[in-house]
Every structure is written in C-alpha cells, then in structure tokens.
Length: 116
Image (cartoon, rainbow, N blue to C red):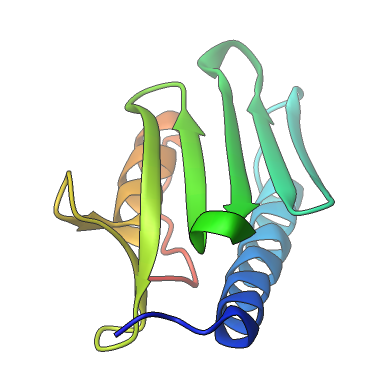
C-alpha cells in the first residue's frame, strides 16, 4: 500500500525531529569537540570530526528518507507502516538499526536511537 503524501510528511517529520533532538542531546553528553548537528529544510547533517559526516534528508517526491553514511555509504529508506520503521529493502535493515550500530561504534558508547 502506497503512503499518502500527508502521511509521509507526518511520519518523516516526526522521525527527523526525534532524531535531531536525540543527536543534539547526545552531543551535550559526549566529549567530541568537532561533533555538530544541524537540521534545516529537511536535511540533517551530523559532523563527527575526523570520523566523518552523516547527511540524512527527506525526499518527498519519492516518499523516502535518504542517508549518506561515512561508513556504509548512501542508502534509501521507505516507511513500512507494519513495523513503523524506515526500512532499506536492499540491506534488509531499518534506518534506526543501522544508525544505532554505526554511531555506537563511532562514538564508543552504547546508544539507542528513538526511531526504527
């Protein structure tokens, strides 16, 4: 079943807002001088200094969220209403699972992102 545009805007905005807030709070708790979070016009940029930069952005025409990771590269995520998750069919993994794993490794702490 295709996601209606109004539903896409609601679920994508909710995911991006929760992710931004979580990453900003995480930055306050860790000691990484070059850590920076910026969210503007549907594009979330997370800078981790020499560990690289993540770019996560909404793609309304495709009803997707796109990720560019310094570790796993680019990927596209579709919303799966059954599991309430942004899911990459190519990797068979949710956005939350991938980011939780990669950011835990990069930051050296256990984190659990507030999105699936």
